[in-house]
Length: 225
Ligand SMILES: [Zn+2]
Image 1 (cartoon, rainbow, N blue to C red):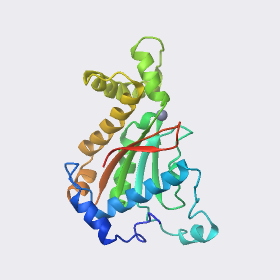
Image 2 (cartoon, rainbow, N blue to C red; image 1 turned 90 degrees about the horizontal axis):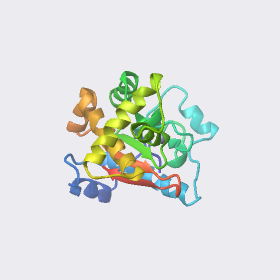
Image 3 (spheres, protein in one colour; image 1 turned 30 degrees about the vertical axis):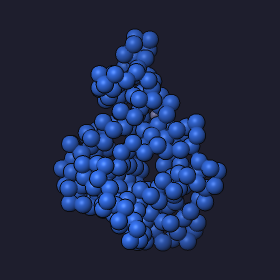
Image 4 (cartoon, rainbow, N blue to C red; image 1 turned 135 degrees about the vertical axis):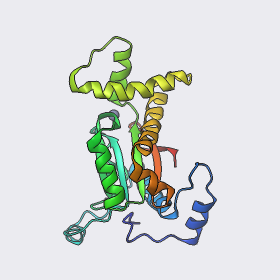
């Protein structure tokens, strides 16, 4: 199934699932749920060694020569082990990627996310952290005084450090917990910083999901949708 939003159709069952979901403060729109399901199905294929590598042939490339209609924008860590198209088993034109070390935010990242939501009309914003994240580990070591990181990388320490302290204040003390809390906090900050994205969520045009990729198993654990 393509996550291209112009190609996906929701079955009545998917509509019912979407409308009955009340786990989040804002119910995810049916179209966003369909895109999320396609990503998670692709991840299951990838994790089980059954990736289809869809929509990566010359035909697809030609279809996209003059347009793109990705279903999702994914903000993920730049880690070389976490490329969204591969771990979600997607193809050309499916995912608008924004990647920074530790999935941190700045003006360029926010502009890219806003462009995806408003200019491309994606249905889903997926914030993807991951297991064994070097940015989280380095931040923890810096706060513990065992590593010194300076220069422009202080931006990583500031943003991941804020997540880490919040997590510690919640009584958490493991890298797993820090990585989960950081991705969740980044998602919340995106919505609070972007009027475009907050409006899209309120108007039922955009859903936000948060997950953490496990480098040890290939699975994405869904933390919020
Ligand atoms: Zn990372």
